[in-house]
Length: 323
Image (cartoon, rainbow, N blue to C red; front, side, top):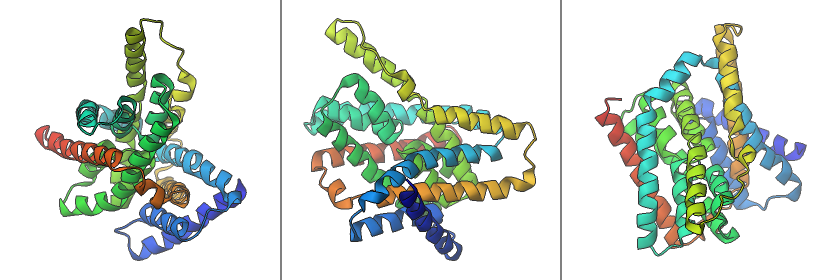
């Protein structure tokens, strides 16, 4: 895996250098842009694939755990519970609109279910979890993941400028990114591109949102079992549970004890951002924009409509609740 990891780290290092000259953009955004640009200009060598796959998932999860070493449990609980109404509201918007718009666009039920859940919860992870229950075709899984991922990449680029244009505070933008962007990697990238506080806030909101995949998978399994009038099939919960969230909370607990001196928080935060940039570079290096754009008009339109609806409802709920 070493060649792929080193390649992603090198792109992340370049992104860090560029971010010093343009701090408004941020290293994670530069990293994914550079990665996509390199992948567009040159084919991906086979030797890099294992390391890039490792970086895009495990390194990202490690970065989130490391960022927990700078947070207190009081802040995590207060943020998670305080933003829960907005989180639940945006999830409901996506899950209600997905079947309605899916039928209007004449998409197969499994496909619009996967896109709806991917938009509502946590992108590809939620799609993979739900796929174990509703058993869609492989092509439907691929279409859903490609659709959701396309808007993840777009969100990393457009959310920070829109946030500045709207003059959102760090916490408001973090809540917006955490509820309106699909995949964890893109949420973290957009959040830290806006600012350190926004990045931490967005991470907590996103991890709270990610835990909702468990009741949704359970509900779909029960619905499918009732429709078939049979016992619910065995669900691989051990694979579905986002265990890195547990480790994130452990890191928060460690910091809450006071063992880690506050003077080291800046260095830890910098290390976390570098790991995030490495993961985003790996994701970019594996992204084929041409294939994403060939996903098809129907799935892309559904993904776009859900994405806009969730983004607008998040801002509307924040204003209505005085957040």
